[in-house]
Amino acid sequence: METLEKTLKESHDWALDRIHFLCENKDYEDAHSVRIEFCEWLNPDIEEHDIVSLEYIGEEEDDTRSS
Image 1 (cartoon, one colour):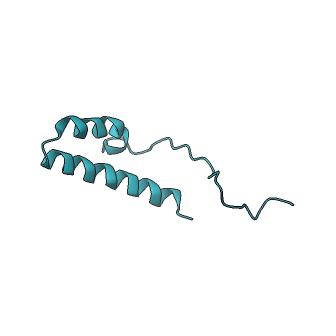
Image 2 (cartoon, one colour; image 1 turned 180 degrees about the vertical axis):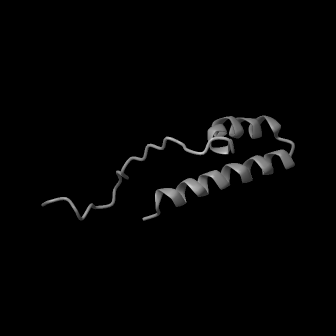
């Protein structure tokens, strides 16, 4: 299972890459939308973020459940 820190880093990097890609293709409206959605994550003046993480709930069987 991936760590929360790794997942957050990948999401941050994706947002930056997506904004750059959209701007290079002159899709400024969508680039702006992504920037607004991730504005807190992309603001270098914010050192700490409040992160809420929920446990995965899915189809995979949980070995920790009692029978």
